[in-house]
Image 1 (tube, rainbow, N blue to C red):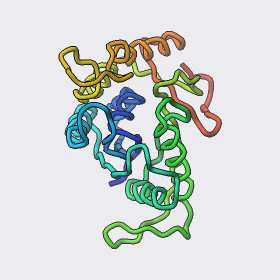
Image 2: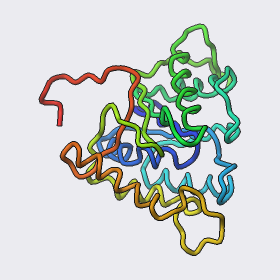
Image 3: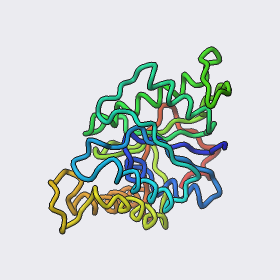
Length: 238
């Protein structure tokens, strides 16, 4: 299956939090989108890896993505090396996306910048003919995505560009809250974490509204890019 967009996240819920509304909007425009989680989030304070698997599947249904896979890397301990790069290259060549979305370039959780660099490097390497990979005994063709973008996560990094996601925040919030073990629940007896506060849950919406305010729309999501953003002409700008 060829995808238009393939979004990578170090943990299940990274993609939903970082660019869930953008994904929902692209799907509404007829784009085929997939998600690949690097780890199962097994070191998360709340819940379990098995529960996160269920939550991730539920979130994928809410967003309407075409496929979701998990590479089963070791949470917090995966590295940017040949073994992990090849695993990601296989996913890129399998789905041949034009656009890849990945973790924030800098963030509080160490897996986020690690995942960001790992996926970015794999996108380049995936285009090299002499790197050979196979899936189910079939030799894969080389493939390099045209564009690699990094969504914004915990830190308020200055975006290089923003996408108007007005009308798609409800889908995003539902997909985020599908991770029932991870976020604000006043009835929970599990330990508190930085993402279990009501303030964090509320930030999903107020951060999008603030970015929207800055470009004159209701809501927006921000991204960083590895190259100049090009537009066809002035009329294509909001």
